[in-house]
Amino acid sequence: MTTTLEPNNQNNTTFLDYFQAYATEALQNQNQTVSDSLNRRQIPKSQVRPLDQAYQVSLKLGKDLPLQPIKKQILQQIDAVVYFLRDFHIGVLGQRTSIFHLYEVEIQVESNLRYSLSFESGKLLIQIPYWQMAVWDRYLPYQKLKYRWHRGKHLPKSSPIRKVWWLVDPIGELRSSLRSLLVLAIQKQILGIDQLFVKFNLLDHGNREHQLIQGDHQDKTGFKHNAIAFLKATVKEEKLGINLDLVLQNQDNAAIAKLLAVYKKNLADIDQMEELIETGAFTLQQKLNEEQSQVDIKMFGFVNVGNYHRIDVAVNLSKGYLKKYVEIMPRKTDVKATLFGFVNVYTIDDITVKPNFHGAMTLNFETAALEKALKELELVQ
Image (cartoon, rainbow, N blue to C red; front, side, top):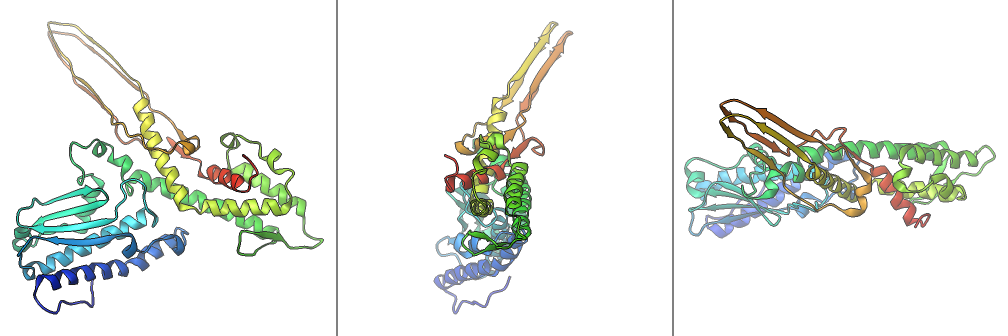
């Protein structure tokens, strides 16, 4: 990564200013990459916060440490951090996350430090002993930084969150896969709405108001019929708790067109999509915690030694009102062991780990978005 900035002299204050400016410029240089990546996911640039506004990269140095010998390594560390933040921002679709929100990465270089990565209240701390940076050219490369983050190495070993980091990680496989699945479903829905607008010659006036072009050739009754059929085929009425035919049969074409427009707007609401993903993840965790482990151990003989461990970590942070749009296939656990003889030793560790969520979780975002649109237009209570 290159920058046009250079320090004018050798004092530490100027160096720190230089590093700060370098980090800011490096973040700005990645904005286009982020924008291009999210644009391919059909997420408009207007919904994406610029990297240099969303995150800060800071440097904290020990007192009276000569900076010239470690200038190259610090710049390498800043570059690694910026690449990580770029991928993080793309991973969360350019949005602010509601849990484990990351807003700053602080690079700490001091004499009496242990080489480590930690997380405190939205700040990721990279700690490197000065002598290792100066003598070994040591820093935390981009790939190692990503690996440690995904493995939860920035969390204390005693933290219960570390045991379920696969569930909490904003850019982990679970949430990333759910985002990808939802984005594809949303794009399909938006395409279907657009095709309806095109088929029935609707004009978009830019304010979510649509109007049918007048003409004898226009089948106005057909538009309403097709729109209701489209909605019924793509959402779950049992989740809505209403009959769409009854709710919409007395609405005119203009009202139906407006409903589709607001529905389309809600489908593109990345914040609500993220909220449903979070609800789904924590609902999954709750279901895992509710599993009933059945342990039936029978032992015969002179010496019997047994050991059974069931390890679960409770994390309950999900949003209640969206739970009805999350469907989970719970896992059943059944442990049986029969032991006999002179010496019997058994050990069973039943640990709740990352499940195969494909097919085990369904997020009905399309239905949630339609319910929101119906309520916004006061078509339902």
